[in-house]
Image (cartoon, one colour):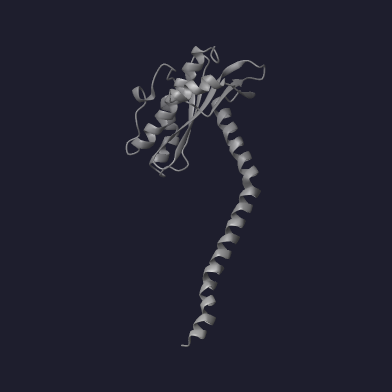
Length: 200
């Protein structure tokens, strides 16, 4: 092959790479566009799911008011390792306080496990709901089942879950993650009660 032929054919070798780059760019743009189109809908679904969990804990709740925490207290909770994502005060139709809902999370076997804990004003646990979307079906996801979450009912804010809740056999990591998240909620309730932010 003559040198001139090599020069003429050289640019052709770049065609597959350029084609692949264009395809990747188009795919990235499509994914970004899909995310933008569905972001609001996903956020609304997540917000509704969170509200449904709160209603499941306090069925007679008419309003769930977010509890505001001062920045220095937030810093203390973070320092103590018990920072939670959300804290709501549950009110009935007459505006009377029913209790509090604290949302916390911990990493399980395959992803984050979210624990929504309901407290009476005196610190007693009303109900706990576990959301573990990434855990292994029929094993780690067992932590979502009522027979496990019912074990937390009646526990007080003075107790730690490991002392009064039996783990699920074969799903120890997931069970411990639930207990860790639950303990964060307990410590948060205790600290905020001591500071007079929440409580009876």
